[in-house]
Image (tube, rainbow, N blue to C red):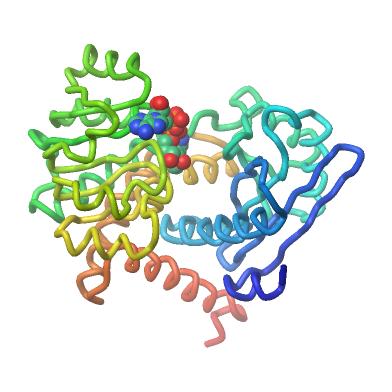
Length: 357
Ligand code: NAD
């Protein structure tokens, strides 16, 4: 494993390897870019097969956070942490507290949060050792569940996408197929119902579908049929990699816009979606509400402020479509250019006092 080469490929600033034999901790913290502000990103706990797999994942995820924060207009850089452990066996107070001590040692360059296999409860242990943690419980001054803000941001991205595809941003009468009725999907459904969209849903949990049908009159399809639903908008809100060689030819929609992370199985699928004449709302642009929520928590949490900032996802998504058209690139490339442009411009004005003018 060549760590410096791997860091260089993604232009990472710093990678920290953390070990505590006493607590059984093996973790890697990756700080991708702090041009805009401290590197914020969740702490993922996963039983990686090898240290190489853990390093590859943390480098990829931390880089993604730089783009997400930059596109959302936040003063945050990109970072991420991974703990190499088995979620069923290895989670305990000492593990998270010693991880918190490593975070504290970075003196605010990295701020951690919940991620896959880490919870609000685990964040409270980290909070005992460092203030550089977000997503703690409301009782501790935290912001709690981010998904209502995420769902609102996705809804705003959807309005901008409908405007792009149909010329008006009204969702009234538009047919939306929602994949997954978890935290984000269920809140999104409420916005769609209020906006008088016609909704088809699926989830592997039949109880969630039944509720959606009863409360909002949603049509139900089985999870394997959701890609074939004739609709205006397909909204992935469950899994990653749902836009792939098998699913894209089946899509019968005009727009893909949903909350799930990493919807494109590979970058090239962004181009294939576009070639099919489908407008793709880049996932990290429209699902930034969760990140916005923890950003507001850092300044003293006010839900209205988080929602107001998530409202701007409409303008950001519109901007992505504008760049895509002007520069003749697929929307996922346009989103990256928007993010890179902001990092570059703000980095410039931070040089010297007046941006080196
Ligand atoms: P969740 O676990 O609450 O919900 C996921 C739902 O998808 C569950 O109801 C599950 O039963 C369902 N599901 C799983 N496999 C399915 C399948 N094959 N077909 C249909 N449904 C299936 O998760 P969430 O918090 O709602 O997050 C959903 C997605 O959004 C994830 O990709 C997550 O990374 C992303 N995201 C969430 C937030 C947030 O604030 N929660 C923020 C940004 C991104």
